[in-house]
Amino acid sequence: MPTFFFLILLLLPNLPQPEPDINQSPKFNVIAFYTAENDLAHISFVNEANEWFPKMAEKHNFSYESTNDWSNLNADFLSQYDVVLFLDTRPEDSAQREAFQTFMENGGSWMGFHFSAFALTPSAYPQDWDWYHNTFLGSGEYKSNTWRPTSAVLKIEDNNHPATKELSETFESAPNEWYRWENDLRENQDINILLFIDPSSFPLGTGPKPSEIWHNGYYPVVWTNVNYNMIYVNMGHNDMDYEHKYDSNQTKTLSYTFDNETQNELILNSLLWLGSVSSQETSVK
Image (cartoon, rainbow, N blue to C red; front, side, top):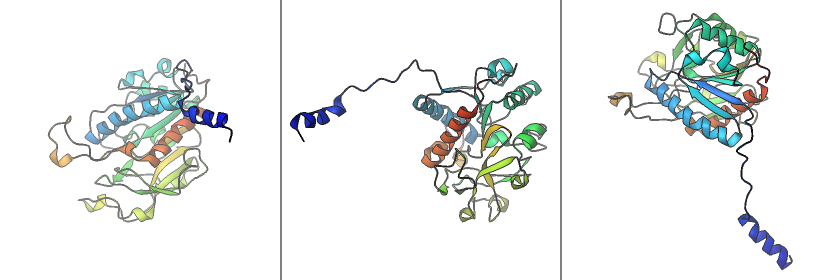
């Protein structure tokens, strides 16, 4: 190789690199709603999510904001955003629920985590929103869960979906509390199950209650509804040092949802897909 070209190759890594265009418009806008007041594991997850998503937003050119003011769930506010996240809970006010349903029925996108699908009658979160739990999510009420939060081997049901197509057929998740639902999602033609718990995970959970340890069964953990731009992800419950709990600000987090690279890829793929399909003509006025 001529000396001149060899020297150019040596100097290339030191040449100034173009600065990212800070004035470039974001590809899509995300707003995350959360409550973060009850379960310490959910609070831990919300705090973690509100650190991780802004990093992804900067890297992948979308905007991310979060709020614990659920009164913002209205037509005017939502008109600024393409994707809504529910990080832990759901809206309880009827006007907020109506605004969210209208947003989704007019091309908006949504991703929900873990407790955002919870409903149990009687409880502080009863099943009193039929559209959301039966039509939109399709899951109906919560029925049971595993305990303690543990990892599971997850298996892809649909590897053609943008959220899963680049993932390995099975992978081990971050520790989580896994939910079982009232409805069999396999029987709902509107539901596309993307991931379920692989049988190699059983027994799943450590108890102490026998019902908190699953030995068999089919458990969907990520799915979409083909009638909406949406995806539900059952992950979102960190393991906490409950045995030594004495202060909500000092209770130790023992596991982190976003410490798992493959699971992160799933979540990021899901969000980028939702951002790409969200209608730019969404109208909730």
